[in-house]
Amino acid sequence: MKEDRARPEPTPFFLPGGEPGILLIHGFLTAPDEVRPLGEALARAGMTVSGIRLRGHGTTPEDLAAVHWQDWVADVRAGLAELRRQRQHLGIAGVSLGAALALYVAAEDPVERVVAFATPGGFAFHGLPPGWLSHLARVIPYLPKIGSDMHDAAARRARFIYRRIPLRAVAELGSFLLAMDARLPDVRVPTLLVHARHDHAVPPRVVRQVAARLGGPQQLLWLERGGHTVVLDLDRERAWQAAREWFERPPEGME
Image (spheres, rainbow, N blue to C red):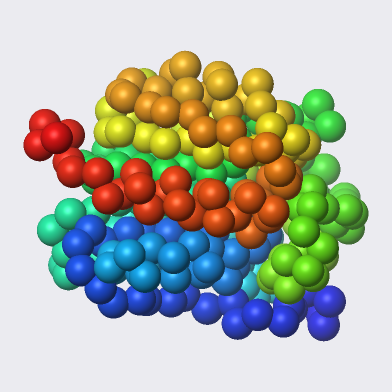
């Protein structure tokens, strides 16, 4: 349907450069264009950047309804493997679902640093657990997406995002977040968590809980303006700068 396709080109991107190589992961219902401005900022600093497209995203909600959360994890692993063939030093950054995927994979893969923007944790969708949502999706397969937590109106209008939400995909998201939460103590790489104080999609208390469960060194940066999609909202340049500075640090043990 026309309303499910947005103006930007929802395709993966690759920006060549030097070390380190950075994998960027977009959020739920969106597409790689969400993280492209961040990628361009990192590329201007001389880094190699790869922005992947998660399965079921950037096409139609029907495609997303057919995807399992393990497919998203496989997409991140494949993107990281491809980047590793080109660069020795690697980092991962993601937004929302992308942040959770970055942490999940960092628990098993020796990347050097992670930046997690607007990180979700646990799961709640009108009080229904993922299993109940899977059953409900058979009766009500889609819900309209109403409203946005973005404060920048121009950025909100420009980005790719589905206008219908497949309930089955929401159930997969919930199951994944529970699996991610169980892995947080195994994330031992240095992690920067960037979160908006006025994020209504993921309240600040949630990212504090995520930070407390991480098994390695971490820092939490609060942004005073904007909502959930911090890499595109009012404090986006501060978010980009924080990511650049984090990835420019030498590996642990070499500082």
